[in-house]
Length: 76
Image (cartoon, rainbow, N blue to C red; front, side):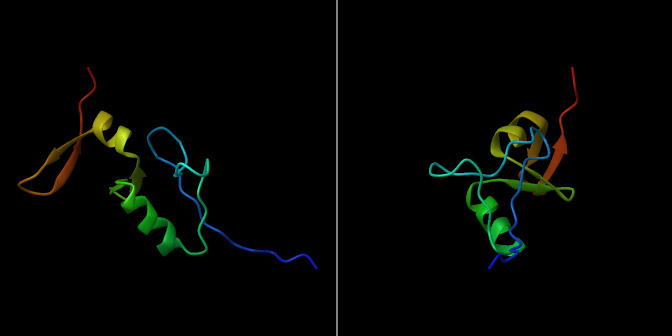
């Protein structure tokens, strides 16, 4: 028997790298909630409805601790 299974993964909206860990290149989870929880555990951030890995958050955004807001860095 062949069963169709829906799984969820995530990739960075900045660099397109998939959410992964040391054991796997890319993670997939059975629910959207599971993949979002894992992304948060790996310090990914949702900014304006898009998801960014920690490297892209640092590279692309400034963080205002007082207001808990990310703003896009201006390109040079």
